[in-house]
Image (cartoon, rainbow, N blue to C red; front, side, top):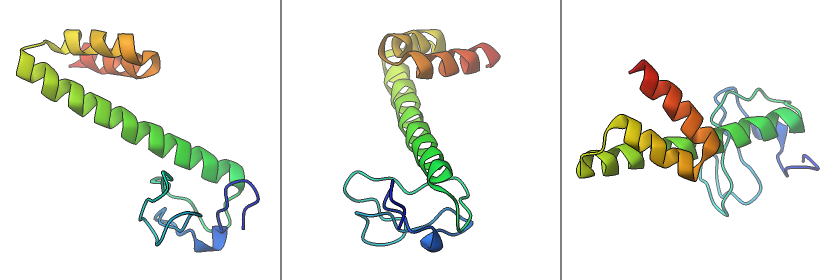
Length: 105
């Protein structure tokens, strides 16, 4: 077992599915823990597992915020720029990414 994350690297596969302490089975998120969505090879160290998990969790959270913002924005007739501005007030890093995307659209 990993002393930092409670992850047994032998249970990780190249598809990123694995069992993390607190989860009942591979890919079943329980106890607020996330299974890394990025490919994590068997034997990966704590740092790479932590980075993959944090990135995946942040990406999923950001995607949910973006989707919710666009749905709510569209329902209220907001423009893409207005949705991006709303994110700026809530989440600086996420807003910067959304702003970049909105400039390209």
